[in-house]
Length: 101
Length: 183
Image (cartoon, rainbow over all chains, first blue to last red; front, side, top):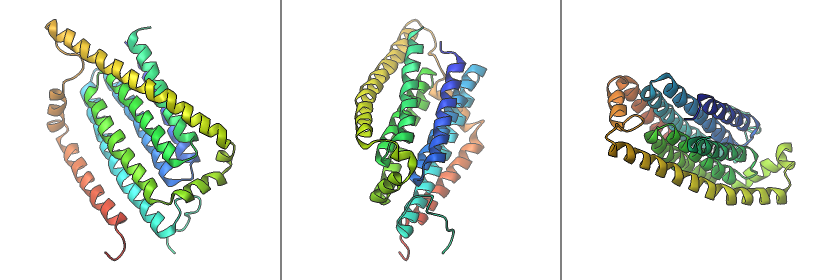
């Protein structure tokens, strides 16, 4: 039996690393990777808590919804990045600082 | 320490190493590969939580679809620019090219067999355990797909429909955004 705290620590560490990726990276694709890591961390915590609270089905279904939203977000985000790369020739967020030009 | 705990520690190590690899790798393509390990580690953790279906969904959606999309985006956006912009920043300059190369290949040599072996042990262990339980006439551990599907189509029917609308909107949005002008 694995204690709940282990899952929570894993989730916290994974979330922190994902946050660092999203904040430190200058490449837009890598920022999206950081967001995906954070969503994964949240899912781990969600499922482990639901299991510890005695309602595993609810936690797993919520996690599936989080995955749905994450997939939709990745699709739209990457489409935006491809559009920016086509118009702008850069996907460095430090250099994408104009909304309209 | 039980076998499950050891397997959890291995999977947690794979997950965290993959995440740190995403943070520290110089090339975006390498970051995408490290991301695969992180996702696989999370899938292993799901199996250890008796959430086998979620692990399958994790591998299908994240390892299969999301990573493919990310690699596509890296391919379509200018890779040379990606490299230059990383050399430009202080954070990446600190990593020596040769040391980085050695780190990356070393990680690959360790991570691939460790992840594969841990997955084999975990899935095999869960399978044998369920077989033993059903042979003893007991109900299987964890929640069945039956129960999950029933909850999804009764209690969570409205969020399910909303999610389908969201996916449709994302589909149309992605097509519109990535389409070339004037087509």
